[in-house]
Every structure is written in C-alpha cells, then in structure tokens.
Image (cartoon, rainbow, N blue to C red; front, side, top):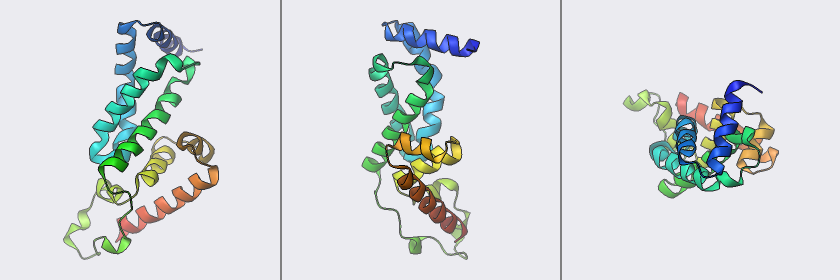
Length: 168
C-alpha cells in the first residue's frame, strides 16, 4: 500500500467516525475529481451536479466499506448525479443531426461543449467514462448500472453522433 493510499484510508476512516476536519479534507481532495467528471456530462449545470455529488458523498460516506475504493465509489456517484442534473436541466432527447450547422455555416467554430450539448446525458456519461476516465466497457457499464451491451451500444451511438456533429 502506498503512502497516499494509507493517508487516504486514514482520512476516510476518520471522516466516517465523525471527524469534521478529516471530512473537509476528504471533500476538498475529491472536489476537482468530481468536477472533472460532472462538467462534461451536465455541461452548464456541471457545478450544480458536482455539488449534488459531493453532498451525496458526504451523506453516504459512512456506508463505504472499503476506503481504498473511495475514488471508484465517488466516480459512480458523480456520474449518477451529473446525469440526473442534466436530465432535469436540459432536454433529454438528443438533437436531430439535421439541426446541426452545415459545413458552410459561420457557426462551424462549434466547440466540444456545443457538440456535447447535442447528446443525451446518458451518451455524455458513457463518453466521459470511456474517453476521459479511461474505463473499459465492463467498468463503464457497472458505473452506469446497465448491461455491458447497453454501454457498448450507447458508446457507439454517442461517438458516431459526436463525429457527425463535429464534422458537419
């Protein structure tokens, strides 16, 4: 076990016992990680999703049995909250690809955020888990709580939609 893991585990155990300083330190350490996950999924509502995820982490930390699993556990919560907040705050259906700007449209300078906005929260979530977090299909499916085939098909559709939107 590495030194940072030992410190992390001690912090988790202390926070679980009610040590508010340890809890604050733990949440401060998780905040950038949670924000990195929530931002691309919940887009403009990323900060709200991160806040909701941190609240859920705070409330549920006592139930975490294996402190070494902290980041995986926090990732699952962050994805769940980001998808929930995105569904609440934005339309749930992806835009029709015909609505995307044409190649000669001045809005061709569309950035990644614009393209992501056209995807459903579920598609953004699987893209974040696979392409930003580097999880394999099995792990992404477990985090999303869907069968591996569903995660694989969502990823395929999300990547195809993203590529088509980016190129148009």
